[in-house]
Image (cartoon, rainbow, N blue to C red; front, side):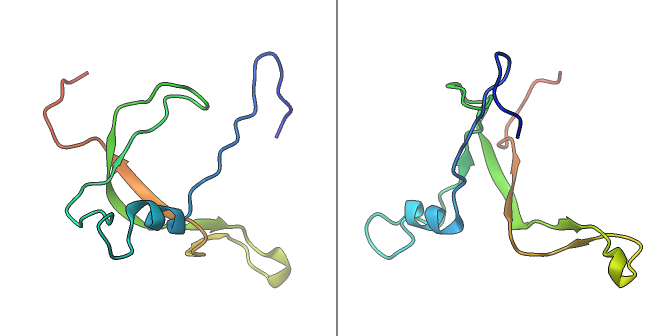
Length: 103
């Protein structure tokens, strides 16, 4: 990562884990547990470190992300491939259902 300059800055954020999300949702039995019917809404940042949020989006799909594995030439492989390494769990976002103006 290049060092910051007068035109750039370093933005560091701690990504949540599945365990962090489980704790936040109160998935343990009790009065603070979020009910199953409650939609998960994501408020994406407009820019790194910014104070403003972009439009809310909903999660419409989730699953392990496929990751690109380059070829292992030493083992005689000539082409890379996509693999399910299960190191990243991906949430796919979309704007909520509704009527929108065409742009």
